[in-house]
Image 1 (cartoon, rainbow, N blue to C red):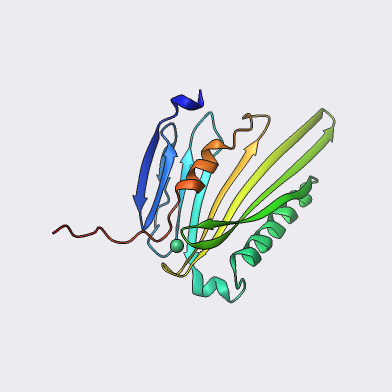
Image 2: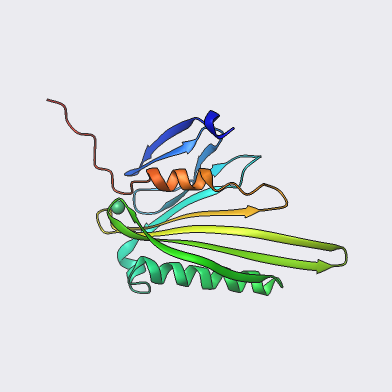
Length: 174
Ligand SMILES: [Zn+2]
């Protein structure tokens, strides 16, 4: 099935990326070069979200992508634990995104209930980037509800592989 996936290019607000063509692209109202959000939506797949904001502001709290990743994950953890779920960070790796040292975090949450008996598992992937060139922090996020979708990391990984966060203006042809 994977060999049949076709990709589309999205190029907006100095972002460049490829996404599987079964996603519908929704740019949040009010989005701009400085801040905004784009959701990739599909009934059969988990939503992938790209959000960004002012880097100079964020750096007062989070000097680098790693500290922003940790801060965000602490908040996510609190939210899940408030709802009675267990949360754990499974892995965190550094990777290169358009020349930046980005942080990819893989975590999961499990909510077990007994009446009626059910286990709800969430797989959460997030990528944090600090882009000095465009003065933005960037977060790519995906939460898979395993009871609704099978685990398939490929779309998220493809977006990461193709993501550029500070693509320049169109080159002038001479
Ligand atoms: Zn960048």
